[in-house]
Length: 107
Image (cartoon, rainbow, N blue to C red):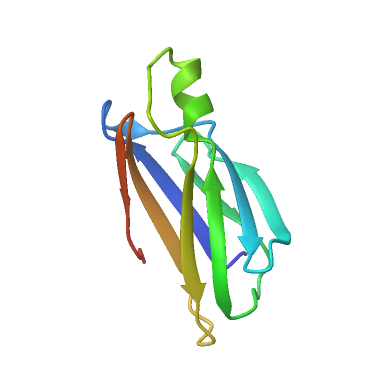
C-alpha cells in the first residue's frame, strides 16, 4: 500500500468529493502517481516507499466544481508537503469549497 493518501471533503455539501483527479509529484517534478478520488473522496497513490523530501499533490478542483455547475475560484489546488524518513504513512486531507480550501497533516 502507498504511504501517501488524500481524502477530499466538499464543505458545501458535507459529503466526500468523488471524481477529483490527483497527481503526485516529487520535488524534481517527476510524476510518481495519478489517481481519482473514489466515492468516499479518498485515494492512495505513489510508491510504497517514496523518497524522503518535498512532494506535491495537485488536485483538479475546478473540473470537479464545473461538473456540478458550481462557479469556483481555484482551478486546482497544489499541496506541497514533506515526506520524512521515518517510514510513517503520509495522509493529506483537503477540506474544499468553491472559494477556499484548507489542508493539514492527517493520520
